[in-house]
Structure formats: structure tokens, C-alpha cells
Length: 391
Image 1 (tube, rainbow, N blue to C red):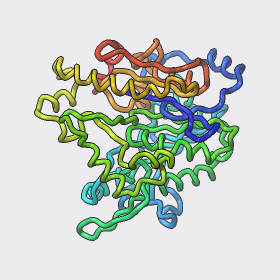
Image 2 (cartoon, rainbow, N blue to C red; image 1 turned 135 degrees about the vertical axis):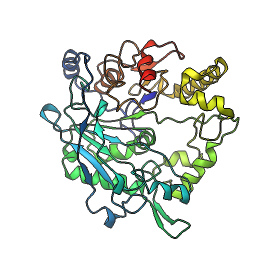
Image 3 (tube, helix red, strand yellow; image 1 turned 90 degrees about the horizontal axis):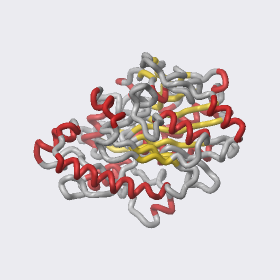
Image 4 (cartoon, one colour; image 1 turned 120 degrees about the vertical axis):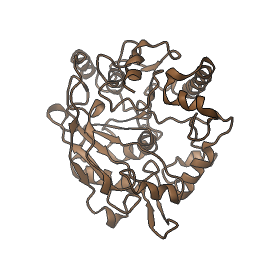
């Protein structure tokens, strides 16, 4: 997992574990939080199911899923001291880069709300203060993913059989935020925007926009879980993912969410890479290694270590950013914040004797300075073993 905590790109704005950090909170408040930290759980609690809500008036705004159905989210209201704090979690899922692949997604919950069922809340979404010590009583919103391009596109097209497809991820983002503002988020005291994988990339892309929607005195931070993709050659020796992202960018018309100063120097398709995208790795040996790291040969492990080295090198940009943070463990898994096992439990991965939840809380509330934790090479960290056994 690579989790990165940073500050927003706009002047005097803030971000988190992968993107934004707000201005420092009052020192006395931070001290109080430090001494109130809950102990680790001795048991793993049962996930909670929260009802699905369809976005009102979505079709009129053109804010629809790939198949034209209204987007959806799940909202659990906060309580007590967390009643005015908001955590927005953007669901992850696969990207689609052709009309055919996007049409296929309309047959699933990743392309249509018709197939959505409530997702259980656990990990960073949990209401159990032992499992989720810092955010358990916040308003928690789980925004469902159904646009195929990280809540970023604004276009429409037709499949080969004439079926109309909608690429409206950006409008979905705007419609959801508008609706939440009307449900109390406009009076937020603290906020955190996060997500996993494609949702994590969306949190990065929308961090500055989210910052701009709220008053400057409201802390706004952004956390990216498994959504930082670097541009290196994959296992085939090529950059196979380039053509894939090129299709996503052009089909969905992804330009509006990208930083304008970045677009002056780079093409929108340069949002690359995955080490082993489907079809790029030669032979069954790599398929087996990708499925379970315990099947990897020493040569393959060396290749993975090389990729790790490049990833860590790319993240040096965070070194001098006081409000940014990192939690990069060497566990062979994807998306750790929504899991009740990996987020904060007796068997969670640890760096500097801290769980992911503890590191995120230290960074968000400023309980410790310079929260930048980077693991040693796999398989040096014994706390990763629980994730392998549950894979």
C-alpha cells in the first residue's frame, strides 16, 4: 500500500495522506486528542450496512452513471463531537477506455445504480471507536462509483449497437457535493476527502475543488489509498498502460479536473502506470506471482523491489512539504483503509509501531510532526503476514 498525506495545490490550502492538509489546529486541542486515543481492539467488529440514497434531480443535471441511471451514495450521520465533521469516501473500481468496455460496465454496479446494493461500512468508515478511533462519530459518506473514469469525465457517446452511454463523472461529483452541502456539509467543522484505487485518484483530482467549496477556516485534507500511479515501464518492457489511459482520457473528455499549469507542459494522457496491467506480463509465472506474492521467485521479487525503489523516489516530492504525509508499507495488498483488519486491529500492518489509522490520525490532527513513514523491502515487515493469510 502507498498512502500519501499532502496539502492542496491552491495557495494557502491544505491536504492529506495523499493530498491535502489544513492549517495547524490549536495545540491544546491536539494534546487532548493525544491522551484520548483508544487502545487497539481485541476483536474485529461486524461491518455495518448503511442504506443507499439516489442523488435527487441527477438526470436533470446530466449527472448520471454510464447507463443513464442516477448516481448514489450511502450516508451515516455523525453524532456527539463529530456531528459537524464530514468524511467523504469515493469508491474505487475499474476504468473503461472503449465504448465496448464501458457498455460492459453498465451491466454491473460500476456502471449502473440499478445493480447497486448497500456496501458494509468498516475500517475508516466504521462507527466503532475501537476500530476507528478518530472518525467513528463523523458524518461518513460513501460515494458509489459508476462513471468508469474516477469521477472525472464529461462527455457522451454511443455503443456499436446504438445504445447511448454517458461519461459524466465530473457532473456526478458536483451533484453529490451539492446535495451533501444541503444536508449539512456547508456547516462542516472538519473534513476529509478520501477513497481507494480509482476513487483514490478521484480524491487527488478533486482535492482543490473540494477545498474551494468550503470556507477557508474549515480544515480540508485529502487522503489517497492506493491511488498514486507512476510512469515506468511494465513487465513487458513497454508502457502498455499509455494506450489504455489515452482511451480513458479521450473517450471521457478528461481535462477539466486536471491542473491547468500541468496541462501547459504535459498531455492529459500522462497519468500513468501499473507494473503488471492485464496482458502485459509474459508467461504463467508472472500470473502466479501477481496472484500471490508467495509464489514469486527471487528474480521476480527483485523486479518488485526495483518498482518499489522507483515509487519511493517519485514520492520525494513530499519530503519538504510540512503538511504532507506518507504511510508506505510493503504489504502485498490493495486498498487498506476500508478494511477492519488492515485499518486498526491487533493484526494491522504497522510502521514505527503505528497502525494506518494511528498514522492518519497523527497526520490529520497534527499530533506528531512530519508523518512520513516508509517501510523496508518485502518481506521484512512481519506485520504484513495477516494480510497474506486473509487474501
